[in-house]
Length: 203
Ligand SMILES: Nc1ncnc2c1ncn2[C@@H]1O[C@H](COP(=O)(O)OP(=O)(O)O)[C@@H](O)[C@H]1O
Image (cartoon, rainbow, N blue to C red; front, side, top):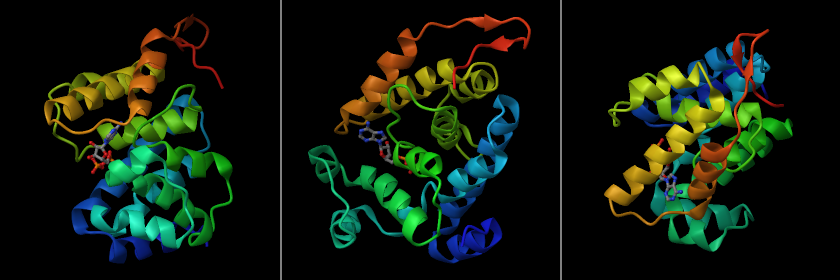
């Protein structure tokens, strides 16, 4: 059932109200970025709609549920169960909601921590999760939002940097993949495409 409307109705009953509102915000933000960066609109909508579908269950139950589905966890995921919903979400997107597209599933897997060398869809979902209109926890949001519609790679660097700051400030354990994401995108060479009047984006 990759019918967006059906999935949306189901998620509305499964997710808490604020999580569902956030989901819609991410879905439409991802769609807007997809229009600008010439990414398949339906893929962006589906990735946005399903990115947090693994959050139907609280963090304390995430390890057990992942084990029940046979999802392999890293040591970092066992130590930080808040990360598991990304893998669980990709699993459910495939096996419960019928998504076969690997690019959408991969985008869901890396939406929380990011990773080096992400596809355009992956970058779009990663950024949309941080900047959707319902977010308000970061004074840098206006600048990051503007950058998202100017230069996708620089926006990824800003989001990963802000996430690292937040995790360190709040004394949480940090999974290394966000640091890798930050280092990769901070150092990535940028060039300007004069014909398209836009920063060059690969893939
Ligand atoms: N690299 C990381 N290491 C540890 N925790 C992280 C990392 N990246 C994100 N998180 C945390 O994982 C949780 C889930 O992230 P996210 O899916 O963005 O949640 P939310 O939508 O609730 O903000 C958040 O508490 C976030 O701070």
